[in-house]
Length: 237
Image (cartoon, rainbow, N blue to C red; front, side):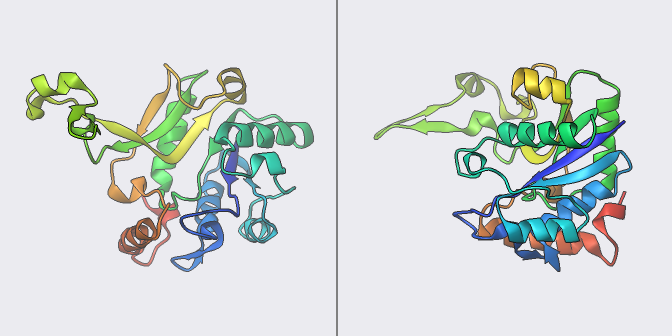
């Protein structure tokens, strides 16, 4: 199986400027996702799609490819991940070779275990014409969520009020760490998740880190330091 890993990394970030090239535990944040992908034997290339020459240079030094700078229409805040990935896969198939799947690895989720990545690929190989998405246990159950009016509040899911909390079904959220899909399915649906998407449960706290703020960054660094213990995350089981 041939898998193209795509790592999207814009230069713009309002909450944490320059985060994709910022040093995270000794190396640029984006390098963690590139190196994770390169540790998997199914990966034919790690294509970094960016609008920043500095990030492109870091990507190449880390073993990825950055054959162009992303066009302006795919570089602002309104750009969708699906459009960025379709642009990348179309270029790769036209200039390199066809692939069986596209693996989207967002650089803001740097702490991934190689064993979990292999688990996701195995799930994908066993189920054709689908996608596999990383999910983690929700920190707050949807039954505990409310919408607020000026002088009142209403539950987002009213059925939760009639069910004892001990009987609430487990709830999960998409964690942004793993998206694997066939190019044909992505082109057909323009979505990563559909009715037949298979969840890859990533239930360890560090796996659900999604860095968007300085507080996220500090929390991820704390968890990463605990995991490293002298060996690479990419080699952990």
